[in-house]
Image 1 (cartoon, one colour):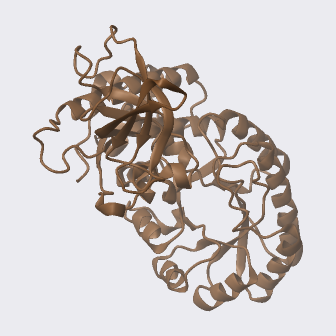
Image 2 (tube, one colour; image 1 turned 90 degrees about the horizontal axis):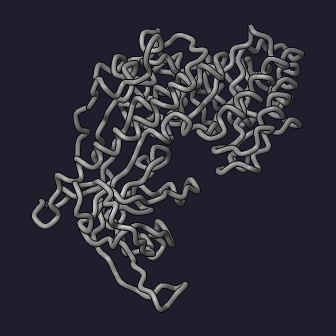
Image 3 (cartoon, one colour; image 1 turned 30 degrees about the horizontal axis):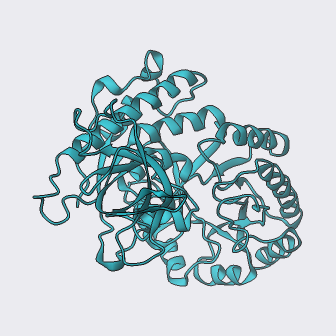
Length: 448
């Protein structure tokens, strides 16, 4: 189903006073309270749109697929995250990690905000270029590239790219000798949700050899990159990585390379951003003078909280409660699961939390919690496929007695969800997205 029209009511754009009138690309130095307040009010808007959309569906009479899962995407939340980035990491230019969520409206907003793009394939490069940006705003941040994709990058002018091994240098020499190269170094990502060092990154013992080989091949090395892992949990990993990058910069200068850019990768999360950015900023100030350009590759930081997913209960089974056999428990089956938008459970180690959106057992206004409903029941929540691993939640207590036709919703579903959904068992991976904007800044940039 195609994305729906956007919603942007003026009364929800509540970053007030002078912040609304600022240049959206300009520096913001305060207004943290307004940003927080705006986020809370935006949440209420998202929930209202979710309820209205779900209430339109009569599961007893609707056409096949009309009760499919759907998203509400708040571009205002992406905008707020950008303002937050600029307040805390003003020196660091974001290159959005397309793989995290290649939604076209997200990419369009990233382009309008002046961000670059971190791409890992021809398809991602094409998506970035379709926003109308200059190829210089793309980094091909894939240390092990397909030859034909490398030639394609040359054809479209995407010069910036990473490498971490000798074979890659020989490949680049043959297929794109004019490329601008970043040596990706190994980091300690042992505390991260998704470890990348197991697959990519040159150790410091090998880094100097690679720099020397690149010089012999007359290839242009312009920077160093690292990635502390997706969903990093230890901010000290940034400090150590910056220190190691400084050593590699010095090695490169001795060999004859003129490095001008440091790519600090991704790993930024909603809950720990200020703590991580503070340590990173201090490290950059200590080890890298102002003339060195700093870029980063944030993904989940921008979009995780911007997307909320609604799914329909398609079946229910009554079973004994495994913790108390004298009580009933219930198995709920949704029309979405780990082979679909909940792929983040398997691939990204996430734990989406179900909340009740609409329930027939609630006799108050549609979607409005009934204060008289005080009982809770124990549920396990399952996906729709015929595979036993398709489980979303092993156990959760929810208010009321849920049944087929009811709706649940899940927040924080913008990262590594829709992008890795499959069509396993014949279920669709092309679900409706309702775009809204809770910020006038985002609305203006996207012409909502």
